[in-house]
Image (cartoon, rainbow, N blue to C red; front, top):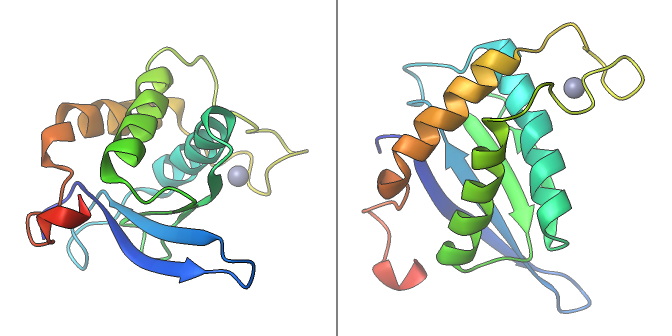
Length: 142
Ligand SMILES: [Zn+2]
């Protein structure tokens, strides 16, 4: 596995029959490199704010504890749909002038942010968009 990779790693059906997919957006190589804390945190804010404002099918975006990427939980199970949604969010980060909700009222560590680092990560992810599909997965899943 060579990040960046975007893929579904788990699926759940709720008792009500709702289909939920757990996506992994892997940014750093596991056990090799970690996303720096301020970048990890600011991108989390951008993802949750951006994904949920563009789609009511996104439930949650959260950083992985290993600091190598993000979980995105959504009622979206088509790769092309998630790829486009994520790309729209990342493209919007380029012109941002502040990290969303990076204030003491909405964030438990409001000092720990970096707009510049989040913008660099977004730009890098966009430049590698063609590499997001995981070649190890069944193409039918994509
Ligand atoms: Zn926060």
